[in-house]
Amino acid sequence: MTTHTPPTVYIIGAGPGDPELITRLGYRRLHQATVILYTDSLIPPEMLADIDPGVEIIGSADKTLEEILAIIIDRTRSGHTVARLHDGDPSLYGAIQEQMMGLLAANIPFEVIPGVSAYQLAAARLRVELTLPQQIQTIILTRMSGRIALPQPQELASLAAHQASLALYLSAKNITTAETELLQHYPPTTPVAICYRLGWPDEQIWLVPLSNLATTSQTHGLTRTVLYLVSPALVLPTVPKIYQGETSTQTITPSKLYDAQHDRLFRGG
Image (cartoon, rainbow, N blue to C red):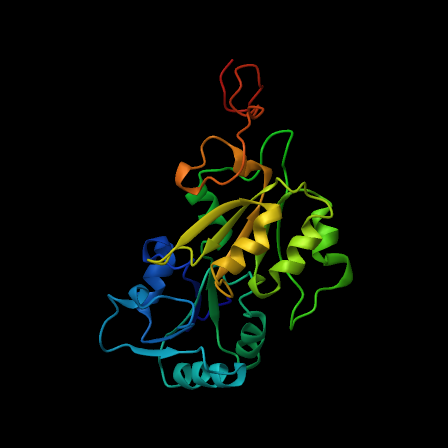
């Protein structure tokens, strides 16, 4: 009979910043830990406000991968349960693959708990659905080339050709180049939501035409913790007026899902 060793490390997605947006499982696992190692540059201290005073809390912003793994392995082998708390969702730009490989090599069991990503909170704040019938059925999550180069087929100009809803992460420092590449395929009037520190107390969102993307970012001095959401869906009338920029509204084709004539498995005939 095979037995499963319970995890001693929990890799948890904290969400974009709002302590209310961590999942119930993530919250429970966080409070089971006796050691918490978290990205203190990207997760607000309020996320740990109700942690027991006896828990060891370690920031990881100034640490290398080797140092992070050494701490996790040391604490688990000393009998502790470790929570590795990441901003957003760990699977997206979380650099967790190297950590998981290190834990596997050290024979330390772990569990990954997903989190809310910034693009999801942005859509919620803007009150839009990023997939619209007969208009947009694809969402692209990407970033600009920088210190980490993108594979050639995944360069922004190539992805923009799809004219899908596009979430651009980690790109504020290269936003002028990003605007140029996006304009190769999106019309200049395409609305873009510039989302700064989503989920934090000082969160701000600007909705502007694509042609004003770089200028607006530079005017506000944005260099990090910014998500850019490019989507024709952002012109819908549900977008709060406080976020409205130089865009116009449009109607949508209703989904067939709840249409009275649509044949559904669970709808009685």
